[in-house]
Image 1 (cartoon, rainbow, N blue to C red):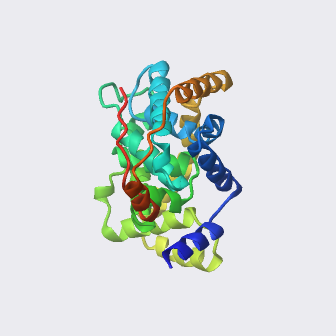
Image 2: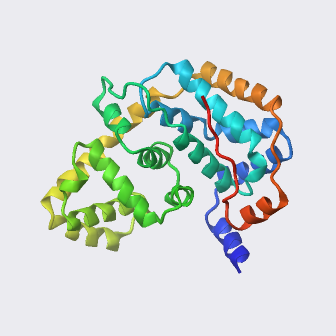
Length: 273
């Protein structure tokens, strides 16, 4: 029954990009390094932005850290049964290797506020807001329910706007979480009208929503700040390709493979220098 549910979920929530990632993962696990490079390219921006959003450091150092992460992921790739497993390993690697020895202040106030977020909140916010990951995939790899994820995203938006989440009443928080759900879902006229009536009872919430919307153009600018140009991207991918070609894969024991088929829990921790 669980396998049937999983199959139906994949059918109803797939995209061409997701299908391509599954194909690349399958081929990469069989030893196709070029397929792994295609898979890696889809997650390169997320990784660079995440580390850039942690603290100030030379670009070459950030690129070297990302290269090490994806080389280690290649080494442990056979543990991943699904694309979501690979994403979970990637998220774990980024969070476990969050740099904490450096300057977090920036000339841009928004960058400083982003760096002050908790690592898990920062990752979820970057994946959802910067990289447009569907809420269900972010919640899956974070191992939390979508409702809890919307609370994290709402809290992060408030902090980035200079508003303390703790200063809000519980009803205001709940209303902001409902707005977060609305922003990430397909338009529904009836639900939108109901939400408008609800927001009208909280003047402060209306002001915060306006700040959230004003924040979006600034987020686009921050995202592009950490994206590599074409030559830098090609050089980084080339380095990852060379490293993967010279790094043997670690194949999991049969019991680990069986466990991971049901629930992805058996995998090595990735540490980079």
